[in-house]
Length: 262
Image (cartoon, rainbow, N blue to C red; front, side, top):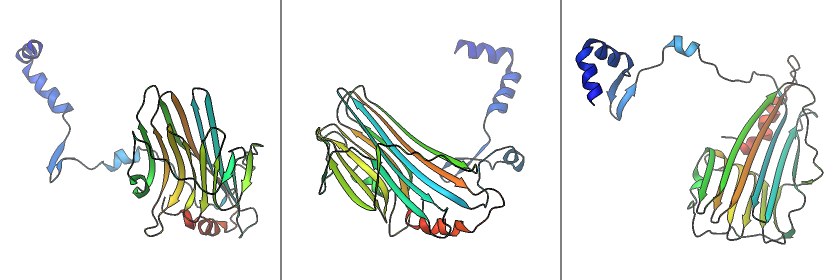
């Protein structure tokens, strides 16, 4: 404070001018301070990303979870590919991790004592990344990545550890008691992994039937120690080469009508 008083005595004019220069210009509104509109000159200097009107020839979703803890590692992948190489009839294929244990008739979601979302995650639209932890020395990382290209021959992952599945719901339980639920139907596509008394991981792209609002969800809930969780969602789009407009974009929208609103 002595330094501030000394500066004010020596250069009061310069200090006042400096404060005026760095102070933000704002006006009082009904909900507090509001900033001014950004000028056209400033907006012209900004950069963004966009996709032009060319047709989409391929759309793919990759979901993956790597879960590491003391003495136990678990990996899960779910792929959905939509190809428009056949024109008006999209070809949709879905793959999952092959070795998930024994098929079961359905597994109830576990309820953890230390964490709970009270069902709120089902009512949020947009991109939702949820992390709830009751424990020590845990690490969770969520990542969503878009890849848009017009290069021909976009590489498709053909992992031998993946197996093709149909639409519907599947449930599995392995020898360690880890349960996996997979959903691929009109309400969306995704999975949930439950490790008993340890935690729950869920990833999905879904929509709500009434309002047609959906979300991309990455959720991790942990009620234990020493967990390292990595969740990834990749959205891959391949555009038709420039000048090769075959009209499949309308069919692309029709094929993804159950996932609209994201």
